[in-house]
Image 1 (cartoon, rainbow, N blue to C red):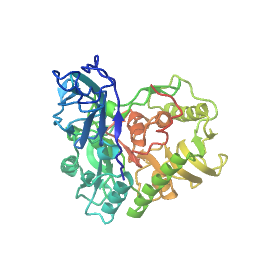
Image 2 (image 1 turned 60 degrees about the horizontal axis):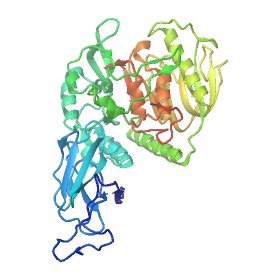
Image 3 (image 1 turned 180 degrees about the vertical axis):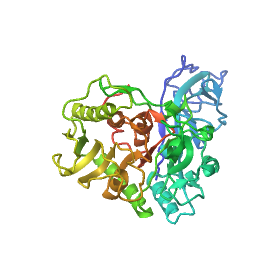
Image 4 (image 1 turned 30 degrees about the vertical axis):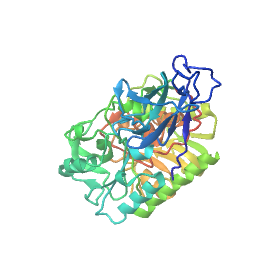
Length: 482
């Protein structure tokens, strides 16, 4: 529930105040019988209400006495975004803040003086979300409602799209699916959240990186590009990837999604999913528990990083997409967390994975995990703590997120809060930069922002499972940004 309290913003008058008499005179007194009553000079502007597009706020000048007639003006970058009526009532245009917050200059002129205040107008994050559910899948709407309740997403953010209940959408049905989803998307939508019951793969739309033959890819990865990419047949460089280098540990700063969307149209797509509707709702509740822990300052655990090429880092002259590049992702993740120093970091360089000798057989209190490589496998050695995020680099880590077997599918059943993986052969180049992903989380990014900004190749194989708004370090990020 949102509680509105008066927001009092005080600014000095622009120019010198003209009172027409001694400042000690009461309002309405006259210097002599032949002069007009003195008006009260405004000293600031008060605002009552939420500075959200489409909402009404009440403005008033601060003055000791009656300022008389007030002339209001609201400007956004030189454009008039009023009107504000004589009583100070302003209906904020719903065309503001489509990409990011707008700073609106509001001036009030009275008694021959002008006062000004800058107001930041923005949509709440919850109103930038479209939740996609499948009314033909029993339980899908219940998952959508559970997530909407958790995030206070309004009813207008719920998007029913009748489609197959299978995990894979036929390629021929993809254009109609996109049309249905984007009929729910507003100009200010930033996040698309499909839920359990909505397919997460699409067949025969994108050519394989190696052969060019159309293959099954991530449906969510294609939604990233929106309707403008509905005819796409090949992968591409991710236009919002933030450059970084695992071999040197030099990364660009995380960029808030609204700033990125000012230069490129895209949508962050991450889903609430699992083995069943009940399991997907449990994922929502795990996220709720994680945010309670964050608020209480009790988010804690161990970072597990699983390399497979020994305890010496590979040569630094490796090519992008090579196996050495994958290993550097693990070394980078290890280094990022060791440098931050918040958590114990357990590294394993054996070819064997955690849960298999000679690697550690148990991974208790696991908060974060990055590792590789075994195909379609999950070693049940992790005890996931509240708020845990982890992923395994392999060619089928998320081929099936609704059954045990794959790494991501099994981890969801095992209690992880967020994960990601490939729905089909991605090649090493098609995987995210794991170290950058965690680095951006530590800079204050939410799960969705860290996802898109750490993935080099777009329109390809990645599916992200977890609340895109989950932000472990929003209030006090341990890694400074720009």
